[in-house]
View 1 (cartoon, helix red, strand yellow):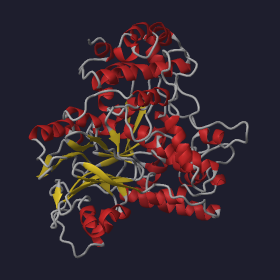
View 2 (cartoon, helix red, strand yellow):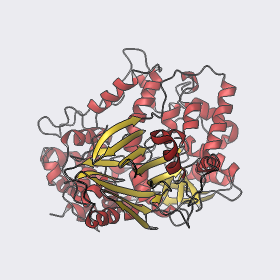
View 3 (spheres, one colour):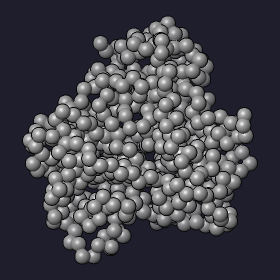
View 4 (cartoon, one colour):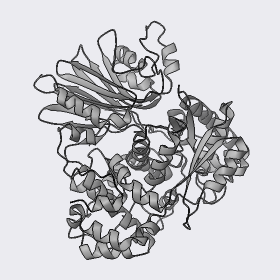
Length: 586
């Protein structure tokens, strides 16, 4: 796991040390274990390393015998099998990231077809004088780029492109509006003018500082659901999950699990307990002093049942006030998912014991877990569109025409999935896999963990698991008004104490309660921020922060996060204090 960055100039000049130093400095938190560089003619690559596999010889960039060079962020979980399939290749390292370099030499751009893992890869093809960028099909690992007058630049995080002076920090209004209404932004274009995402599953080819080719490898293939019996489907799902968890545990450092107490992480707990001789290290967050559902007691019971070493992490009001500026700084591609709060602190605590954490992201998307899927599949006219309403609808907070076209990104995803022979349920799942999953959940996991020097792994987001789950008949995903039906049945057989048929409570963080307790002060401070004053009515913002309603509380949280994000990443303010200190800066 690492941070990567690079530059290919248009005029053929060598990238400057100043730019490369800035890349390394801005990405140092992603790779505290070392740095590496490569430069040749008009191309330079930079990597900061978080050492997970091959601690001794796995430094990057890696130069192959043909002169090709790889710098990668991620983990190739089938690297053992890939090495075995290349017996005639003399590997320089024991790294999981070296096999893709040799596969590229043999197969060209098709090298990604053999990779099972999470990755953002850059390869410099010395003979052709070209740069190749590839991102894993689910978009687990991030990769951004900018086409500038100097050339083509890329990095694991937008803030590295800005910190190197290649792009100015200017907000793109349409992405801002989508973020405010959805809590994330959609598609290729980010919230920064001039910075774009390499899309999940995309491969770009750059020559002379210009993009000349792009190819897509989708995580979900356009084929129909399988005709399969329930017993066979359950056996295949178990084998796929067991195999995925097994390879996701490949590491030369200690690993653990984020255990929420829900069925997704409980399923992983059950499999990890079976596959490991030593107790699993599990970490659970909870919220003291509030009336929201606290998962720690249930998680504690499950951990005890399988003999796991369980750590409980409390996230309280003071954590909210103290940590939020740090979290806003870490999440440079903004995500107003309040789960960033406990995730950040969980990662900070987990770092004391492990360097890798497995997590349950992706199960809902692949197995039909969200209630919005059931609403989307209702008979007409009762059905509801995916994300048809936004956070601020009906609240009267914005000025003029702000947030009028925020739904276009979701509409583009809806249009794309209609091309495939999928059921309505599969279309809903695929819409989430296009934007919500990579641009919200996976950004949250990546930034919160990498800011604390921890690698996050997602066993559900695996091609073998996707093949066993996404193409199941709809009635094996949703039954008796419950999603993830087959996974629930499977878990009920393995670990009935998990109570998999209990009604899904969802994950709630009491941000509205905490904000309301300081509503007078926070409302006034947020309303005075330039980013908020530009788009919102001041009196409406102040009133919003005093309101105790659920919708109003989430809207206030979104404005608070955006104000702090804008201060750090657009105005370039830094703050070591709490929320009040940060918002008081001028």
